[in-house]
Length: 230
Picture (cartoon, one colour):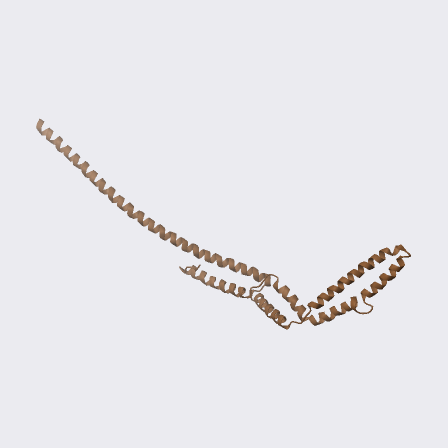
């Protein structure tokens, strides 16, 4: 829909609508998504620290499972010793159960560290993409003076205002069409009323003339009768 430029108010509305379209287009070109900045920043930090993370995760994996005297190896030794002692004293069943549980947890932790290490790969290309995307989101936030969620709320408000302006213009056009139709109808009614009035006036004139004629004839008759008696 286009705004109708019919006067000062409509001209101002047109300018406002153009401004709203410009701001909406600016936001839509970036197309931010809710929570996107938080997720991208986390990924960015992770990629930037990938080498350090790899060192720390590898060290943890080594301490848990891969080196001599690792946590798993020591737990296994402790479990073996307690198991041997339990043969003599059944009161060690509870500690042995806890060692079994600890061993299972350590094995799961070791598998988790191994999986994590497999995901840590340097990716300069992806890091550059993240930097560019986050820069675009931050520029948008600075321009609108709000965090990303505020920018998205701002977009909804801009869209609502634009639609209100466009609907206002549509309503003005609809009212103008209605006014034109009513003017045509009123003109037709006026023409019909004028014709009816002329017809009625002619009929009235004819009736009055006929009545006056009869009255005049009646007076002549009355006058003739009086002369005869005299």
